[in-house]
Image (cartoon, rainbow, N blue to C red; front, side):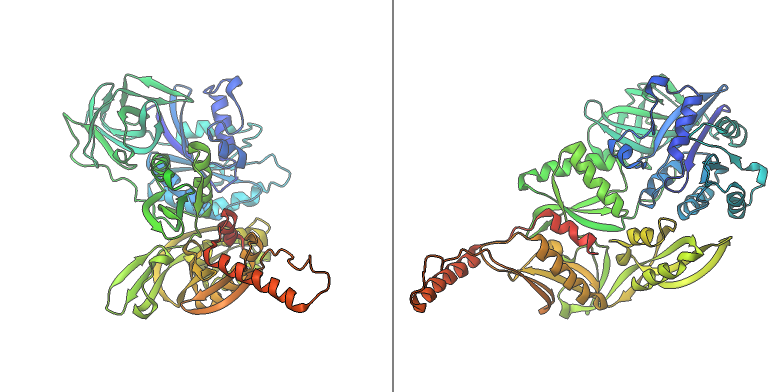
Length: 591
């Protein structure tokens, strides 16, 4: 056990975590030269295309007689739950900072998470070979952040491989060996799981105490289910079966589990014959921040969509969903996501991995609605709002947002945040001309396009991180979109009364561009309750019925026009308007 080191790599997005992992696998000969490629641990096509890590990836390496278990983690704020699970399975962390960009918001957020779990932090400054690198200045920032000595900061370039061996030596020297008793009753912490269509569900775990052998009878504590450990092993580039796993190691178990609800991330595995006294404190449940309805395009695909979401949830436990129905779209699911990028990735994965075509409704957050008789109801969907006359007041979730930027972008960022109803809590200089701004702002305002706008006005420099703080009373109204007087509940949103007029007008204008023309006029209206606040009309496609009249009497022309008018009126009564999928997505990109 004293020769085992469990560590993860944490950093802001695009600071070189996966590249550093690639070099470590190369140096330790874990991956042969013919299998080597960029982002070798990122096994999804989606990750390679976008150049981001979506899932944590665990792999075992051997270096100078030591066994190193590495977990590469995502850097985007939407996948911070993956990071919290990886940290729970480790004793140390490499804090990677880009020498040309310096410390950014997600770096700080992940660092605090690691410090809460008492991890040993090894600061690593990456990309030191770049022309734009500012190593001395970034070193000062790291020292301010974690209070280490200057000589403790390792300089390397993951691209060229300079200094990576020194990082591996530091892991062996500085990170403590895992604590645990191989002879105690078995305790394993499940930190991830995947679905395999041939072998059932494969759970990844860290052995905290005890020893697990092949064919042992084990119990999952939270669900109370019992299984035989058909195969256990360690995670190399492929899974490698072994006969036993003892305390401190990270491995996988295959026990023929078929149902996805029987494996929960954060659960404890123990022996049936000699169980442990208590379960390990797992990590807290992920709190979904953005809610959207996901509906199958064909009604008969409903059960397939449920099965796909369950399989996806195994691999991404921050996704939550529950059944719901809508007048316009039929049966579907209300899904909770950690953010907009997370929502987009889930939609992509449903399409690629399970071949599911879905419609996603406008994302929103959950509100607390207090009625006049003193009851409180949580509303995730504008369609579930009680009648206006029954509502006493509505409370919306607020977040504490931290934005780190250089001082020359302060003005535009302040303007953007104040437009989003934010209140400035404090601002302070971190180092040089870099500032941290703290805001309290409504979560509903950042859901749709805040992060994209922040990136564009700060030329990509500002970094953003947040956590939910509390609920506060707010003047919210439900904005409905009507097509020919019919309400489209997939386009309904809850918005602040001050923004409703502008938002409604922009929605109508956007829908006018996107809806195909019909044989009759389509009235697009935005309404609050019974009051119409904006309107646009998609003009009908008309046949020229007067083309055959060469001159002649006006009454003949009028007769033809009246006949056409009656036909259009009858058509309008029976015609219905199909809303294309791009219209639902356009609401996210109104600007």
